[in-house]
Length: 184
Image (cartoon, rainbow, N blue to C red; front, side, top):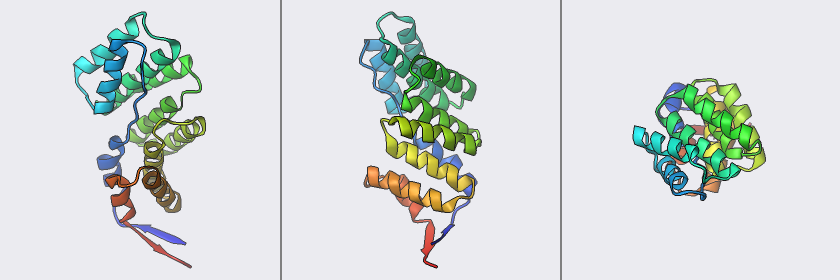
């Protein structure tokens, strides 16, 4: 099978990679829940960061909820292109909960945003192995990374998997349409 992409990788990363960030569910406190909602809704405002920080400073979070709140604040930081802060939050989440797949997946997304594609793939692989909450986003981001690394077959297969996991999602559909598949 020969795969060929019809759109430059840089445009794919600049336009599409940020669309696939995953948040973590937090149930332990109202502030933690509000932080999770802000991450899920795609907010990037300072008030959302402050809500997450207040949740982390409060005593009402379990270990897993605290780790999830770090992931959620990291997702918001990632969308703000505050990569150092995002990495720090994902690292802290993993120090609290080393098996938290979402932290690995989102740390991988941060690497992708910094054009550190091989590191991004490795982190996403770890997150998928641990069971990411939104695996379709992980496969989508890994596809973007594979495409940037020139591994078109893996990119194509990951876009297909993202679409299989979330039928009707326009981003993987649009990217799959750019590929021409020829049998050898």
